[in-house]
Length: 160
Ligand SMILES: CC(C)(COP(=O)(O)OP(=O)(O)OC[C@H]1O[C@@H](n2cnc3c(N)ncnc32)[C@H](O)[C@@H]1OP(=O)(O)O)[C@@H](O)C(=O)NCCC(=O)NCCS
Image 1 (cartoon, rainbow, N blue to C red):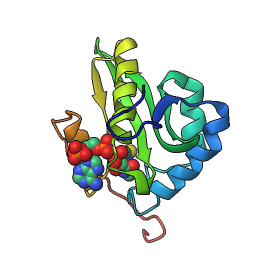
Image 2: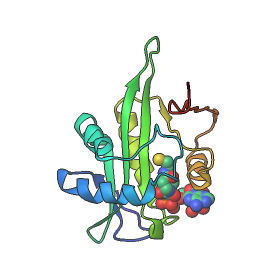
Image 3: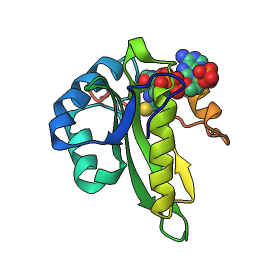
Image 4: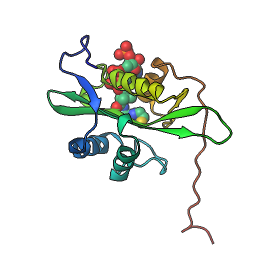
């Protein structure tokens, strides 16, 4: 898939083993601890390697002039008591200087297509409530039915 309206050289393709370091370091720039104050969403090398092992077809990169400038990592989930197969888009990111240039849209279009091919009937994402860019992006891609989710912590070093 290539995007002509934004940049002739931007392509989206499946991630390979050689891309893992570049994707990891780009993710480190994007998903810092202030990106997601809740601990449950932590970017580390296991995120990439686990998804790459389990769902290679849903691990995509955006490449511009042979450089990795974005990625989308997903998996599928089958819930008990539900005939539906869900696609979970776990991480999507575009290099800061290239955001708003259509790379995210290309990545999402390709992962959605691949999820549909795998029988997915609903795609789910989650992000922090203050991630305005992310939420605008997902709304533009057609996501709705936003659910609020509460995360709480119990600091055991303070409890007696
Ligand atoms: C979310 C993200 C992947 C979008 O990628 P992108 O390449 O910038 O997105 P696109 O250029 O394809 O944008 C498509 C649409 O999303 C919306 N959008 C994207 N960035 C936006 C921003 N900063 N503010 C408001 N709307 C935005 C716009 O409606 C845009 O359409 P338009 O260009 O016609 O206005 C990118 O902002 C990013 O990497 N954010 C940090 C990581 C993150 O939050 N990931 C999501 C949770 S895992």
